[in-house]
Image (cartoon, rainbow, N blue to C red; front, side):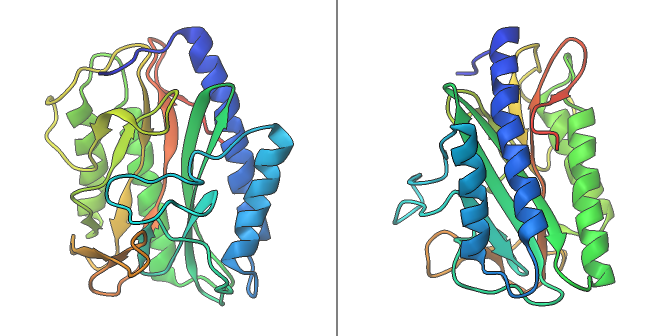
Length: 255
C-alpha cells in the first residue's frame, strides 16, 4: 500500500532529510587518507545526536540479513556497491567511497547516499561518479505527477547503460515515509509508461547503483551485508529522498 503524504508531512520529512544531508556533508568532509570507516560512522552519529534524530539503519534487519546492521551509515569502498559495514579499514589514496545514511526525526524518515573519491582520483572513477549523479538527476526529473514508476526506472537505466555500466537487478529505490522502506519499489531499469502512476504526495528514495565493469553480477560478502561486484570493478551509489508534488519533484535531502 502506498501512503500519500500531506503537505505538512512532506515538510516534516524535509526536516529529517536535511539532517541526512548534514550528516553526509560532514562525513565527506572528514573522509581523508588514513581515516577509518568507523571514524566516519562516529561523525554521522554526532550529527544525528545533535539534531535529536535516530538512525533507521542501526539495528535494521531485513529478511536477507543474518545479523542486525551495526552502524548508522553504510560505507562501501571500491568494489563494494552498497550496504558496506563500517570497519577499522583506513582510507587509502584513490579509494572510491559510497556513503548511505538515514535519519528518523519526528516520526519521519530521510535517506540519501553519495559517492566520492579520497586523495587523487582515478579518471575512470570520476566518470563513474558523474554518471551516477546524472542517472539520479534523470530519475528525479522523471518523478512528476502523471508519469509512472517505469518512467523513473527507464530514465535511470538509460543513463547507466549509455555509459556502459552495469545495474543490480534486485536492488533499487523505494517508497519512504514513517518507515525507511515502504511501497512502491523503484527499479533502476524499466520500461517507460509502465507501473504505478505518480501522484502528489508520494515520496520516493531514488537511488542508482552503477557497476563500472558493465556486468550486472554481484555477490554478498561474508559479513552478510556488503554487496560486491563479481568482476572486482568499482561501483558508485547515489540517492535522494524525493517528494512528488503538483509543482514538480522536491528533493528533501538536498545538501
